[in-house]
Amino acid sequence: MRSFWPIYKREMFAFFVTPLAWVLIVAFLVVQGMHFFLVIDHLARQVDIAGDETPLTAFFGNTVLLYLVLFMLVPPMTMRAFAEERRSGTVETLMSGPVSSTAVVLAKYAAALTTYIVMWVPTVLYLVILARTGALDRRAAASAYLGILLVGGAYLALGTCASSLARSQFIAMIWTALALLVLFIVGMGEFVTREGTLVHDVCVHVSVWGHMNDFASGIVDSRHLVFYGTLIVLPLFIATRAVEAWRWA
Amino acid sequence: MSNLTKRYGARVAVDNVSFEVGRGEVVGFLGPNGAGKTTTLRILAGVLGPTSGSVTVAGHDLVHASLEARRHIGYMPEAVPLYPEMRVVEYLRFRAELKLVARSQRARFVDEAMDKAGVLEVAHRTIDHLSKGFRQRVGIADAILAKPPVIVLDEPTAGLDPNQIRHARALVRELGREHTVVVSTHILSEVEACATRVLLIHQGRLVAQGSTSDIRAMRQAVAVEVTVRGNAAAAHEALRASAGVVSVQRIETLEMVQPFARFRATFEGALSAEDQQGATERIVSAVVGAGLGVSEVRACGGSLEDVFASLTKDTGAPPE
Image (cartoon, rainbow over all chains, first blue to last red; front, side):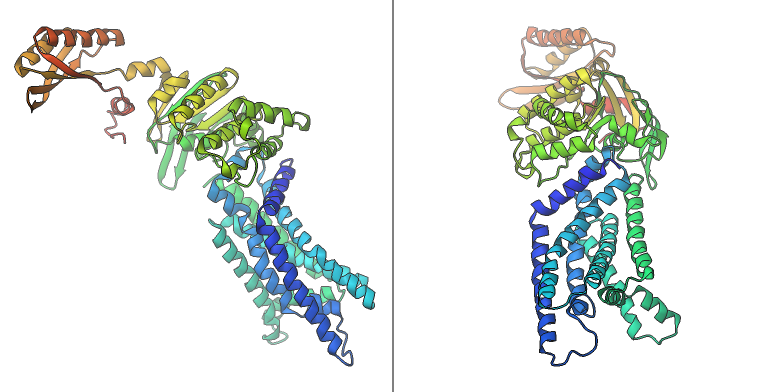
């Protein structure tokens, strides 16, 4: 595992020295800024505050905007991880060093996750604005960010896995986007299946939409934690095995 | 390396290859393209796993103590893949850390490797902007970076110009003083220029091995081709009479302003290189003595193809 650190540093270098990370971050912040504006504008126009919707729940849950931007941004963040190294052949020099497959996978994943977190950090400013102009439930905010971290973590793990299996960056990107969409749509099945059936229960259990709504309202459900834990560990494990398998191809 | 076999599905890329490389040897891995050189070297470098057989590097088994074994090898793949967005010195620092060079020694090791490989002048250039020759040298710098006892270079001169080739060969020879070096190539003269021992591989099999002089002996000419101006029959007679020649064959007759004829004079099998030289000189003087003109003398055989042809005659498979 000693090779984790140098690979992590190189991945971060590759992210931020090439325009990719900056392009993604700028695109992300533009969309999130618009999103925040819409939410605030919408709430400000309401004469009587109906129900329990707060800017926080509206920003992090019950909105498709959050997922749209993740679907667009996560695949390009992870597509390069392994596919690029395999295409250019650098994977050969990498793997000829004393590095373990686990360290390689974790380092690349950690670098993507760090970039993801960096992407979200400026949005804390929105909370500052909210706290200045009204009451902010700090614990709900923390829970919402935990949700963001878990959903992003799972998405990036799926992307890393796809990159380790795919031959080219483009294929990795398509697979990742497809996996994220399918997961999301299955979750949406909550609204179209009959309550009480097994299919409905499954849909509810995997619904990223539902999870984020909970997190945004300050509910940290241990089932969600287990779900995302699995969704992070399993793809990363598969990626490790895939990296190991190149040796025996 | 013993009884190494690598299969890709039904295709056997490397077939039961065993060899040993001692400390301080420069071993040339020679074979035509597609012979299994790169596959063997990739297994040796720990990038690929063998289907069967075992590889031991500096006492560490490459499958069971893979990380430990890989610490003792510096490997440069054929295409010299590098990260294009990094500067040379950044890349080498990253590689040094990856290869577990102690922090206190990293800067010194990187400097020494850059100095040896001759890339100091481009240390702060982005790899993307380097010429092929410099990229190759950065690859070599990376291979020698952690001062591993074993260095594996896959076609270190591929794609270089003659000047760079000479530089690369000199570098390989120099590395041989401190490290065990395994170099692959499909160029025979390259092995002679820098290796102390040669392994010939053909269709995944080790067909011969020996010192460089053994291989040189193997590639000695089997015949000379002589182009003669004048009476073809007289020339034929003069060639027949020369000592050391067993048979003479007329290859073609050219009727230009003057008559020319090309002959192939085959030497006796057991001639040494010096005897051959003497025989060639006698052939020329015999032809000249007969009042004919010699316009061209060329040694036949001795190319890598001929060596492989003679080695693989039994299997009946022609080399590429």
